[in-house]
Image 1 (spheres, rainbow, N blue to C red):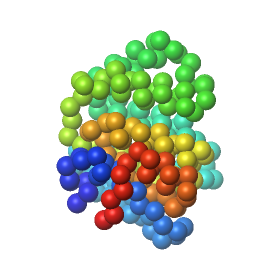
Image 2 (cartoon, rainbow, N blue to C red; image 1 turned 120 degrees about the vertical axis):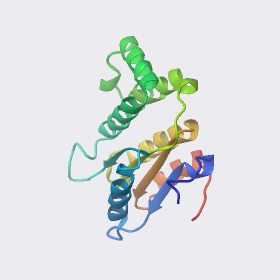
Image 3 (tube, one colour; image 1 turned 30 degrees about the vertical axis):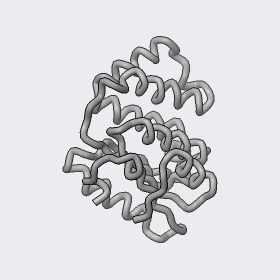
Image 4 (cartoon, rainbow, N blue to C red; image 1 turned 90 degrees about the horizontal axis):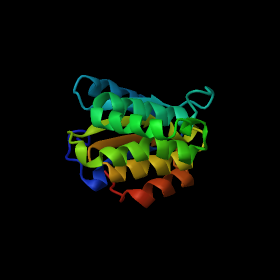
Length: 173
């Protein structure tokens, strides 16, 4: 129901939280598989605490950027332009990386992308390094991007809850 609904501000971010082992990853995997054939799945990233690549926040951001660039040539053009202006943003701190790889290209292409809602799934955000910052960045992008929906699973950590609730009004299903 959430995936098919119109992308209103309050419904663009779905946060599924619960204790470890309650089935959040199974639900995220099932939703990802279900959406794959519908054309509304932008992509997914499954975080994992014991895998350095899958807990790296820059890899999560890079994968989201890659998925958007694959689907939106105008975003890709904005990204290339930003990369030409500052080739080394990737080696900077997390916020600079986020702004250079995602925020600035989105701003450059903001009014030029019209798309039906596309969904990006992030599973196990609490297993990602700097999960509070990443939650804030992702919430900010969803709040400012009308065509992007985000499904996030995690434990109910205060840093994640605070970041999500600052940017997105709460709606309980």
